Image 1 (cartoon, rainbow, N blue to C red):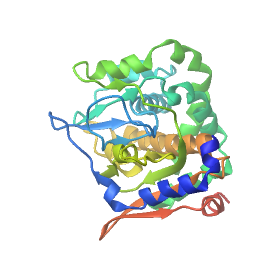
Image 2 (cartoon, rainbow, N blue to C red):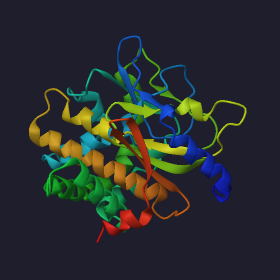
Image 3 (tube, rainbow, N blue to C red):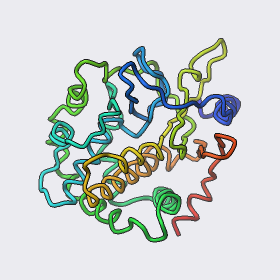
Image 4 (cartoon, one colour):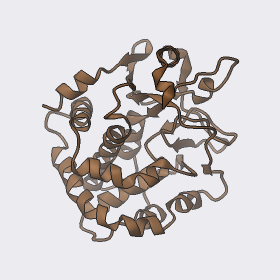
Length: 292
């Protein structure tokens, strides 16, 4: 990660990300569906919408949320493949995507371990976002329950790996290119949490021009992803709350695994305002102060 030793290049990327003109409304495909994909910072090897809802692991991450929710509601088997194949409440207004060589799928055990025994960094993020998205004290029981069942899920990961979760995501929309590869190497030196419900990052702008940005950013469309859960039709209230808790744990634990120990990575937050989009840096000491 020698690119992180270049503060000039990291600064160029931060300046790019602070520009509201590099964000836009989530795009629709020809069938008027939004795409939901991963936070991977690279350009995708496909011709399609470039401003999408991004969440750790894309469809792979959502499958794990559903499987954790089912464990929390009393099942014994942790089976994300069966969950995403049989889940009747996946919002049909979204096309769930993933990518080959998915780092989230390879690192799911680390994310589960981070949920079970979170670092101060992860706890600080969780509490910050709990305050942002819920009433005081809200959802704490659900977040504790997801922690409990993560311990039950972890020993079953060998079976999960033997199944092909990427293929299961691809089978959700067999007439669309829902699984594609990523171009180039992961050069992420910034991590962005997006709290705007309707706006995403135009990733392609990062990879265009004669002076392309060297340092890339992970981009987590947290508010839009939570809205997908809250607005999913036919989902019972208890399952809805657990799914939201699993999603929030997945977001903060993924960040904890990827950048929690690397102080060189800049952390940004995108928020809505009367002027549209506001981008601010989130200092690590602010995150860590929330873990106390």
